[in-house]
Image 1 (cartoon, rainbow, N blue to C red):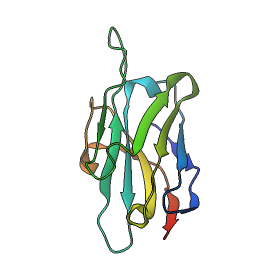
Image 2 (cartoon, rainbow, N blue to C red):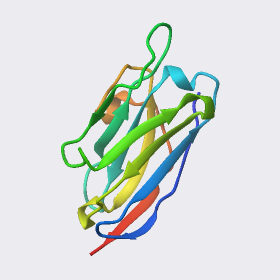
Image 3 (cartoon, rainbow, N blue to C red):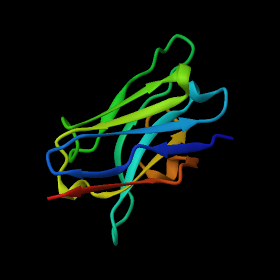
Image 4 (cartoon, rainbow, N blue to C red):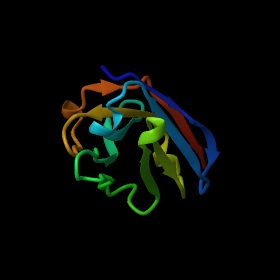
Length: 128
């Protein structure tokens, strides 16, 4: 069982930056790939970024991004702190959404159905 708690959302002007954090419970955090998703009003939840798990001889850290955020957002993790981060730069109003972190035992996935554990979400609002 993994419990996830997001933080760091808020209101920011277009062109600004914001950093999100997701703290996870449990001692096997490093064995879960972590993803960030977002959901805007009236829209389906969409993939934003993911980072692979680490274990054994695999140091982990492979990442994948949605095209809409590539080059602007950076996902990272600190296994010692059981935390995954999403640094968001050059934000625009289209980035406004509730952002969720999620965990999956799979290596690196972008589909919501593959993720077993979800946080409660944190609101990010970008004003024009």
